[in-house]
Image (cartoon, rainbow, N blue to C red; front, side, top):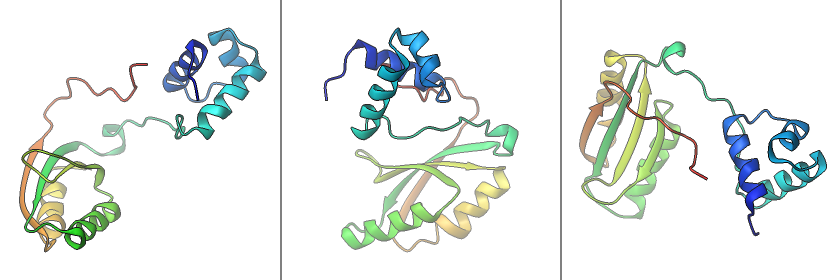
Length: 152
């Protein structure tokens, strides 16, 4: 699929407000509503637009602590990694997780209510995983930049 300036304008608009109708998009990107609908559908089918959703205020919902945790496994191998990845997938406290290069095997983004909840998660869940060897966490004191939009 070839992406042109109209597609980029459409994606920019949808990143800022995914609730825009095709009629509203047509005013912003200077195409007809039917052209916007067709282009949006093509971008969805090409897996360029993956999903639509609302960005929620974590603190207003009681998630007052965010931490980034680096995890090293004790041993490596397909079974060890799969077991840890299954744990990550099932953990509601872990909001984002990445397999990374460098000084850790995984980087986890953890959102919880407070330090006590974080401590309980670490000691009663994460550190009890038999494949976990070393864990290092940094607690976010103040966000400097939290940008979820892609610079297209």
